[in-house]
Image 1 (spheres, rainbow, N blue to C red):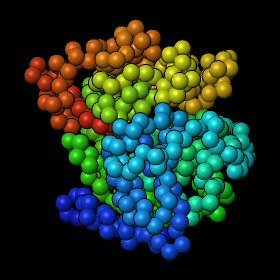
Image 2 (image 1 turned 180 degrees about the vertical axis):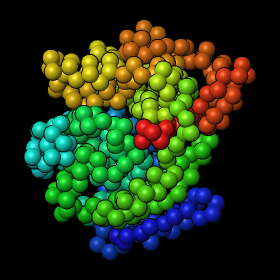
Image 3 (image 1 turned 30 degrees about the vertical axis):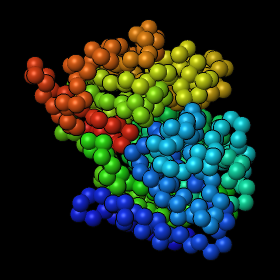
Image 4 (image 1 turned 90 degrees about the vertical axis):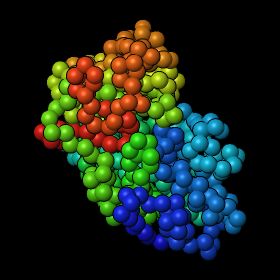
Length: 421
């Protein structure tokens, strides 16, 4: 592989021809017989990573055996239809579904002393480093593909997170999520070198160095659902990731001039089918919403809470009950104590009473939504007032004079009042 940095031209995006040329130039085919691609799942549809995986597949398929493991983390496996939509015409038999509970092998551990240091004493436990066992199965090249974008657990998504969480095991997923939640997502989102990132960096340096692993990173936005790729960064080390972070901080963070009283967010049903993923609407906007403000979540495809059946049961049981309640419940309930990623998720998805969250659904009942500690409005009723087809991203003035702030896809950014960032 060859290192590569590519930025968009004046039209604001890297077009298909230029992207293909760049990916082709990054490859050194000599000696390659077996290649593993690690792209994100459909919840990162607008990353352009699916298209990149498709291009790499076609560049390699005639001379190599190519396998693809979507980096599900704890998400549900993708269907054949979803794989077609995300990755194009790659044959479905080339895909391997990752199981974060059963498919992993321990390759090391991050010492408790290191975790205690980077967490400023908040967490005092070692973290096992587990990855999908197939990464150790003799591949000549492993390509980790994904988007660098503000993230609630690690600060900026991707790079080694795509391995340690995307094809990782329960220990790293649960403990990294809890570390981030304890430290405070508002101190990390949109920034590099968070405590969680330092844990990933430690694990990358100590336990992945002998793998034939390269990172293929994108920076993208999707105004009006049209993907614009602003950068491509290919490399083995941290340099490309840091360049991507700098670009994503320019392209994916929106600062508002004053706190927002009402925010309306649309959750594309293609990407958002659970509150586990859909609560990006909450944590990507929380730093922009005024105290006492309101968040309206238009979620026509959300039909469940957890991506994992066990996690779904726990979220239905405890709901988004707030940071302090979640921590207290974790101390007295073994089912939560043994599933720390759920505790972290409950914290991330709670407004802690600072603003109101109304979920507008078609597939979850009012009873289910209110039991999770959200307000409720039927989706069909909500879109009569807040019609995504008539709203533009940013500030909108409604016919009755009300001012709202509309976001068509919260997964692609972070919105913040500067005083909170």
